[in-house]
Length: 111
Image (cartoon, rainbow, N blue to C red):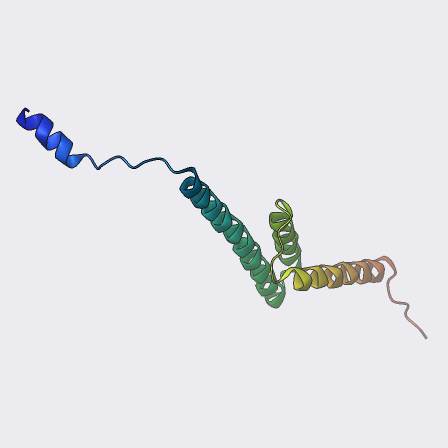
C-alpha cells in the first residue's frame, strides 16, 4: 500500500451502519427543537409587546401581539403568554374604539 493511501485510510472515519431507528430519533429531535424555538420566539415577541405598552407605543404593541399569535398559529402551537396576548389585544381594541368615539364627538361646552 502506498503511503498516500495509508494516510487517507487512517484519516477516514470508519463507516457506520445505517440504522433507520436512529435516523428517525434524530429527525424527531430536530423537529422538537424547531417547535420549541418557534414557541420561544412567540414568547419573546409577546414580551416585546408588553414593553411597547409600558413605553406608550400602543401601535407597536398591537403589531407585536398580532405577530406573536401569527408565529405560533403557523403550526398551531401554544405558548405560555397566549392568554395574556389575547387579553392585551382586546383591551387595545376597546381603547381604540373609545378613543375613536371621543374624537368623533367633541365635548360640549356648557353655559
